[in-house]
Amino acid sequence: MKRFTQWLEHRWVNPAYVGWILLGLALFFFAAATNTLAGWLYVISGVMLALLLIAAVLPPRNLQGLVVTRSPIAPITAGAPLDIELRIRNAQRQSKGLFQIIDPVPSGLGAVAVHAVGALPPGQSHTWRYPVPTTRRGVYRWSTIDLRTAAPLGLFWCRRTMPAPATAVVYPQVLPLKRCPLLDTIGQRQGQHWRYSPLAKADTQGVTRSLRPYRWGDPTRLIHWRTSARYGELRVRELESITTSREILIALNTTARWNEESFEQAVVAAASLYTYALKQGFAAALWFPQADTLRDSARVMHALAEVNPDPGRDLRSVKPTVSQKREPTWDEDSGQNRAISLPQVTTIWLTAAGAQTVTLAAGSRQLVWGNGGNATSTDMLGTLQMDSSLPLEPQLQANLAG
Image 1 (cartoon, rainbow, N blue to C red):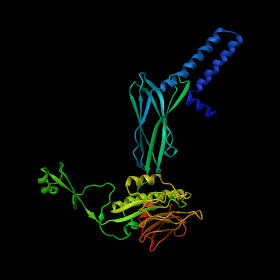
Image 2 (image 1 turned 180 degrees about the horizontal axis):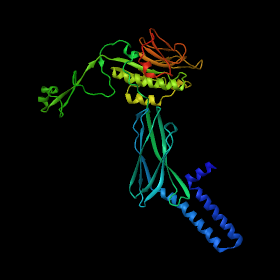
Image 3 (image 1 turned 30 degrees about the vertical axis):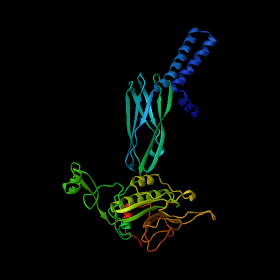
Image 4 (image 1 turned 135 degrees about the vertical axis):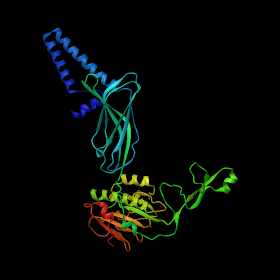
């Protein structure tokens, strides 16, 4: 019965409780008039039926001409509220009012949001902003919004679904690490490289990278007088500093068998280690068995928001990049996953106990959740045994076990 009433409400109209009562009375008076041949009973039943007909026709007309647009949702970190904004415009010449806006947000973000609009004059818009609290990372998508009304008589409900696609990205929490021996003691500084930064900014010291026209506020000491004389206008040097840099790969083993709490903690650890590595001057990157190496901060955080454990995935469809040079992870003869081959750079390996064997570069580190044997094969590997029942931040700031 519920599915039928929902179908009626979406396709045409669904009688409200009062509407069902009035319909029953109209039929009762009509049956009584048929038996008694009393004209006044025919009049009463006819008036009731006419009222029901008008009440059924007006709600769909009340929703016609309403245009819904949704503003883009800015990515946020888990724990902060999503700011959702919807705008409803009345494109007709008649005033609209007494309708509900229903935003069917995914269950992971909480209950369905409902907002009532009292009146919307012709050509005017109504903006609805509301926060949605978040507790867990993820990429949430939904594509529609519902408008619902029973105006003006309240005897029939009418609901219409309109397209309003939305994508809400909730990044994992980033812990404010003050120290991290796991990264502070890793590898050796090798050579000189251009400083890696996902958001490149010109420096005010170092070597000259290029020359550009002078802009208001530029220091006069950066003016290149010889070039300025040649072009007849002031030219300023753009500088870039050269610094020693260490390359580090944050690798999350999504093919292991995780429990939910441990995997969520591992994702938070990966985001925190990546952010801490950038602050410490590392050329940091993120790696999954099912994806290419990611370096851009926005792509890294988006991938961490969307990632889920997938121990049963057939990895034959994965195409390794040239820089990764990893072997296929599927043994076609035995039908089993072979050892994962990571890029041969210093790696922080995040995995669950009992996972398949991997070979890491010298100087790498690992974080292991759960109890079990070593999941890696490498020399002089520093290990942190993680406990998902304990706070993560103190564990990441703890000294290595070996």
